[in-house]
Image (tube, rainbow, N blue to C red; front, side):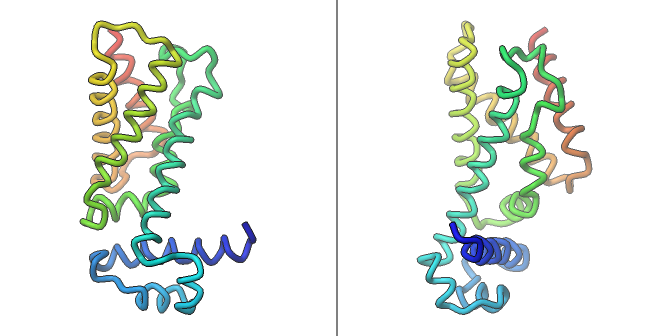
Length: 185
């Protein structure tokens, strides 16, 4: 993609998040977006059908980055075992930190009412893939275990966001690792 197109889309994406901090998504117009971004309506419509398409693209990119962050330890720790995992291998909280304005807006507003379902479904899919990759053997039904863990990770993320990110991403990674290891005993 051309650098100018990337830059223009990036400005619109940042603008929608910025506007969502100030007002409800349903009250934001394309005019508000282009005025704040200092671009024309034609520029907006060249890249997005409507404000919903813009928000959908932002959300899709965040969820794709979440997947990459979740997968990161598998590239660094092979073969993968939780007891060999180090806090610095866990990148999911660094992902949240990179997108902290997005997460804050989503948690504090009703802009994406289905976001909890989207993120937990994404985490559950990643966990099921994880179980398959590691050939996890357990008496617990894998779907139930993945659902449980997805909501646990989501819960940690929400606690961190609602707490104003008072801990560092590294601290959160250490806490998650302690929780995971505690479960093993």
